[in-house]
Image (cartoon, rainbow, N blue to C red; front, side, top):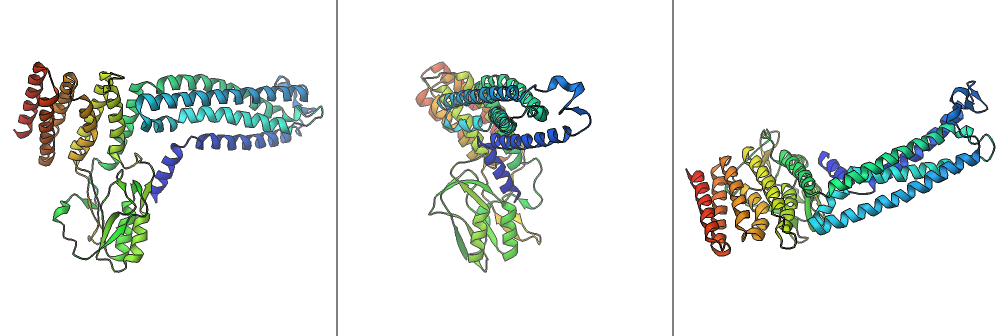
Length: 441
């Protein structure tokens, strides 16, 4: 249940309408409350003809002045709201063309942009509703004294937000800031999926050696799409209830076809009751998300690096920055204990076998496209190998060393074909040889 709530929060976070809608509804509530407050205060003895004598300068003299002020506020804020929307569309177009369409999500989920649009729309709605409720009598403006002043306060806040919004847009389209935000999300995903301490209810085991029995029931995919979240706790609870073991064949971020299967049920006595509950534990959607998918942020950084290495942009320093962040994330994974893939129930019986990405798969996902685009660039390859040299220093598990060694072998093969400079080739081969010696030593 918790994972599904987090998934709902992430969907709302990446929707452009959620924050403005909440702020508009809040402005309607604020307009009603201020009307009630003015009605209560106007009946107090402190008021003379509807206003406090000592605060006389806060109040409007007549209804026409009050309506004129609110009309100016409403007209100006809705105009600026259109400008804010136009600037946002330009920023989204620039992000899509410059950094790739997958990075548009990062701009849409920016709370500053959503809040800026929301404050202008909510100020417009507040001024419009308050103006509509002012009575045509001479006391109409006085009975709405505080409501009008709140409209003026919201306008001043909107002016401040406009300055902040322009500053935020100028900052958000800088590639270093974009890469930094993706890197933060990358490490948050690593902390969730590769925690520093191993889970007490699970352990890592070679799934090829598991003997779960000959009889099994396939769990079909409810629909095609990307696996967004897998609720392990829910699957374990279902397996406990029906005294069975569930094996999941996919991981968050993988694409499942409508005709494929997401797993198998072993030792289950009532598969027709188990299958719908197992399917409900997986959230499948049209787009991948970063909640449980470490590769999601890797691909975003990789996309920036690939475009930076393209002849049209030719920005190798951005590619260097992305590679450094990817290597840092891979190094963090190497220093964490292997995540469990086998989970037991309360009685110690095996209840869930999940699919986990190995280091070799993460290495391929992070660097393959970048190497494909930059393997003819000797300077870039040297920078990549120097980063991999630092990665080899924290590579302790034998299978991880083998994965990194094999990746270096593939790089050495590419060098023979694509690096034309003999000087670059010699230097690159020396670096590869040094790293491999450290891995096998």
